Image 1 (cartoon, rainbow, N blue to C red):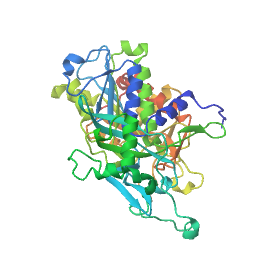
Image 2 (cartoon, rainbow, N blue to C red):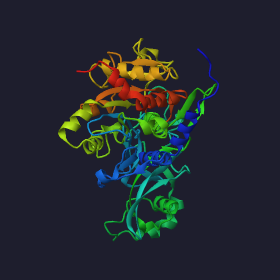
Image 3 (tube, helix red, strand yellow):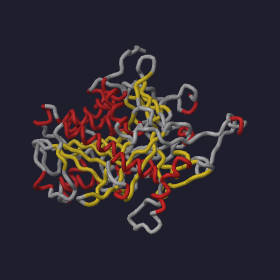
Image 4 (cartoon, one colour):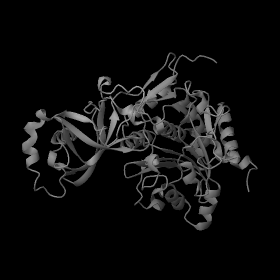
Length: 468
């Protein structure tokens, strides 16, 4: 195989995206900045879209700051035409601060956390952790939600020394409730804050000062430049402060948190933004091009910002408002559900079916499962193959062994709408660990596929005889 010595520029831009996006809230914010740079206009679900939307327009809207839907309307588009959609998710397994987080034990200040998703939790031990998320604060104009990203490491979940557990290398287990509580400081250093906490006994219902260590709240107030009593609630996630970076002997890898699934999300944003600024976009009479970045996939997608919500159906209904045009639009649409997949592991070859062992930097992976954990079928995969072929790329296949369970994606749920759906992804190692490994060339492979979808699906679909 040819040795490539330089990681593509897209890999470095992806690294910047991840480092700016420690939470889904930040990922949406980072994606919005990229779209606005490409000329996209913000709209709201409460707007009158009939008056707002224009042919040749580029638009996006967000929901709950945690999901994003962006789309472009061709000059000659009309109701009943289709949508070309890339759907991803932007949440990842992590730890989240509890509503009442204040804990202490043996002279340590601790922070109560809850596990989110199916993480490889031992990978969070002995890491330099910090906090990021959104904070509800009061100001001159009422309540507002502000994003916070504390870059200093302030939390740690220490392991027990081997001298105190000589079985640790042969039978390591731990209790996620009692032995997985981060430390944030020493009690003696917090004694001067007791006067602040003492004033919370008769606090109003909108005050959360009694629920969390005053040192944590003071740090948030300082980061946001507000008073401590202006903080009324928050959703804070723990994250690893070690940055995402390109690595390997020939820069063939990316070592990073949250690649499941900011990897696909970044590629979708890049493909839509670049396609929307091309000359072809302004003369197109094909589909509406659309990306949907969902939240809560790691816990089932059932939320107002998850894939089981009304985000895509809202767009379909408002673009094609009559029953007839809606049905036509669904029949003419195509959706690529993109999530990362399992790369062959050199130390665990037996975990893959021998003919379905994807390799990094060797092309897009089509994911198939007879039990419909993935939504791919032969007709849809043919279209994906043609789209990849148009960019000179390669295709790999992944199907799970018969003696192992299969994960899932946003694809099967979204396919219930009637839209043709295919599941694809790029292969990574250590999925759901705090640090994952991907191929640096696969970022561009994903961008190329999505770009090919946006540039040419509708013409390819018209040429195809694979219809009912």
